[in-house]
Image (cartoon, rainbow, N blue to C red; front, side, top):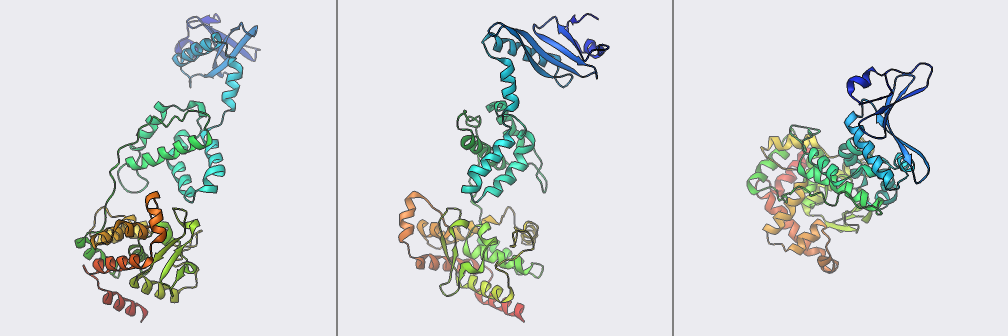
Length: 407
């Protein structure tokens, strides 16, 4: 066979290693500069080779192995290489630069070390999100590979992926959170290049406003106080409801953060999402639960656990079982926090009081919060709790249940 012919799959498949030669070369008659290298072991690779007039020597670039790279793709890459060579680009050094270029995995690890871990309390959640939605499809890609079109395709594809638990596919909100993380990594770790995420439009999200309604609270409390509900789950849910605090803070609540004398829970700045120390008033019902738990444990955590953290972990299965028994739909643990704020509003609290309760921090409200006394916040929370309990469960019933548990 001549070493020059029109490349087709049939002809390339018949090409054999040349006896007594480490490599043999065959040239495409259709595309200038495109050649096929065949090693003594039979490995076939496409290459581009042409005269580099600027440097006065032949320039060679490997395009990829056959058949992983198709003939059409090899021809496309060869034409690009010829254009770059004509423009004066050193295609050999450029190829080496691309081989040495960081992958997204490398960039993400650098971002974690330099930006996330030193400055973000939620960096473990970033790692979890990266591992679930970004690492497998994009982690091994070089930085120059990324474009808005490729990221847009990945962003869309997330919504077709099955959920880790349960039926259905991942939500548009999940895709948006993954896109936001990827964009942050590019912005902070690679500020010298245009962010390829910038022109990718997020999916529209409806603001979630779900909270427990009066008729739902009755079923909710009945299920919560049922014998099938574990005591730790019951206490955790009630504390979450009565404080309006974030899940991470409730789960990691420690006894040295509780002042029974002042009736407050002091969340240190290092555990607070807004970066400031939070003082959460504890209503009577919450204090009763905490006092009971304090007598029953030696752990530093209010809700101890057997895992690495030492504290209770989010009870997803137990929560799902609870809301199923209560015949409730679309209620999440985070909605307990929204329930406190909503019932405060329903019982006459101002937005400033609600914001102080939930630890919201905005430029407009910061000055007001700094001057705000905790007494009206505690009063508002107490009124909201009484209103919630009035739907089914009275404070006296809670006390009676506690006394039965102690006996």
